[in-house]
Length: 123
Length: 123
DNA sequence: CTTGCGCATTGATAAGCGTCAATGTATTTA
DNA sequence: TAAATACATTGACGCTTATCAATGCGCAAG
Image (cartoon, rainbow over all chains, first blue to last red; front, side, top):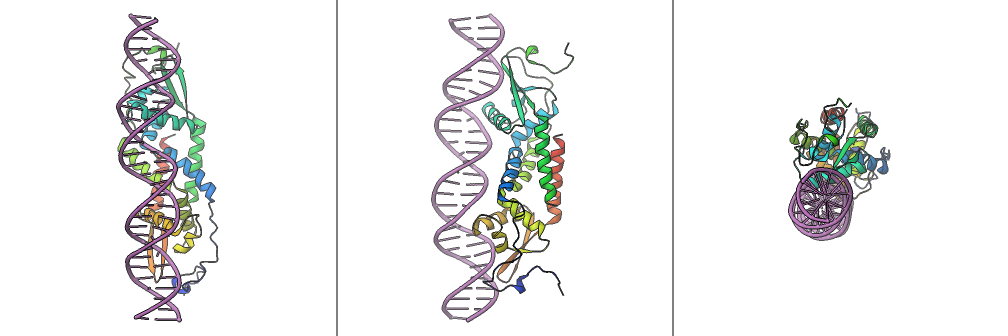
């Protein structure tokens, strides 16, 4: 009895043009790429742990402390810190020998908001 | 004046052991890797658009329809559909010549919940 | 100034990922 | 049976990413 407008196997002949209810890509490719970038900056265990530490420690954290919180060597830590910095999620300040990092709260909040919006759009 | 327990540059001598308030990795490496996997399955424009189409079309969608919704060739579509399938987010059913895909709502909801929890933990 | 230290950068390596042409496999139509 | 169609799989390619040893650079203690 199916009253659905959705074409099913039985309704479709081989070679026939697919669903004319042209599924609009809904999410544009450009939009999908932006959201992908948002997800990718978080999609790494080391960056995730670094961010986590920086979030929990309200103040500034020096690199050597961050280093001891993740299972990779110092150059790799610097590498991921750079990516997070270039993404605008954290900032650094040099004091003497040490470099202190801290989270950019507004930036992080905006990132979380964008991802949440995306997740909601999948509902 | 600073009454904060957090060591700052001035408080720390070179060569000194870093913050003894051992920042517990808070998020374990294993946990971070699991969450990373959750993010990664979504962190691709094609998979994102495929999922989006499948979510918006309640019923089953055949591959040729999905194909026309993304800017890549058929083998690439099959590739990403396979990844989504292996992640348990979608399922397929063959009817005659056509393969129909549909979202696994509970699985998708759980994924979204896990990511939301993670995002909240960054608050 | 020289040495030691914290951190960034470089350069190399390896592994992973996305993409597509070509091919395989059912299945359906002629 | 033969030809056509939908989709999956294979195999190859290029690009990106993560990682670390080695090195560079600035600051600070001696």
